[in-house]
Length: 363
Image (cartoon, rainbow, N blue to C red; front, side):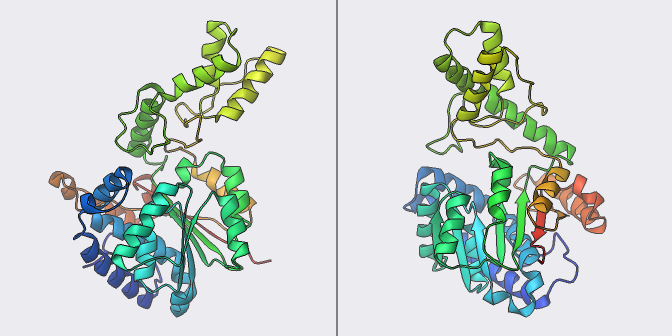
């Protein structure tokens, strides 16, 4: 099986490519045999595992794309690397890294249910990570230092678009131990792709104004529309607000977590000056957890975050699935992938996801 058919990485170490392709092939055979309904994991994880299986080849291709970019600079010494899978979910990147014989793999996620379930799945497949750390990034950095772990590659897939405070995240990222740290973050929130941008805005408006159907919700996720939750937060703290000012504060506080909503409201009540509305038309978040709904940011913003915290910055175009269950799509996606491969920089505006890479600057 070929897990490098949809993309090209110039000057890719052939030994690394072979190792990742073999690892993905072996993992594919293991994972396709698993019946998610028979796993001793949460219902939430069963749904995600089943969804992962439905696009198994593509998901493993994406994993190879991420790991190949992250490990390539290490040459033939890549097997001695320490790889950290941030926001690991069910641990699929960790599984692929271990299957590729990476010496030290660290799984990290903020959600305890996902961490527990990732351990169970890895144990079933005999591909357990070396460390499982359930924490936010600040606690993660402390734990890495406590365990005297030095990180070579910090990787994630579909995580950064959910992080509430990116300034804090990147500030902590600069503190991750590892002299030659490489960061590779893949995100589907590619605002340069018009179709992705419009689809994502639709998801954001749904989270903002509609009750959740609950299919992909974690137990802690809100079921009510975010706008209603913010209204309730404001009314509880300031029950005497007039309807007009209340509704304006609900709009102005879109994309804020509860503590920041209350700071905004307190300032308004104190000085009577209504805050500005958010600059983006639809970016929003759960006001209780801060979990953002596919946050859309210009690539230039990510560049500033990387460079301000001591990293270089490069962006890479992702690629489309060529094995959709809707067969008609498969007539077009290989062609689009070929265009992206031929014109990688301009292809970013066509890509369904992007890879953001930073290498720690030498001091």
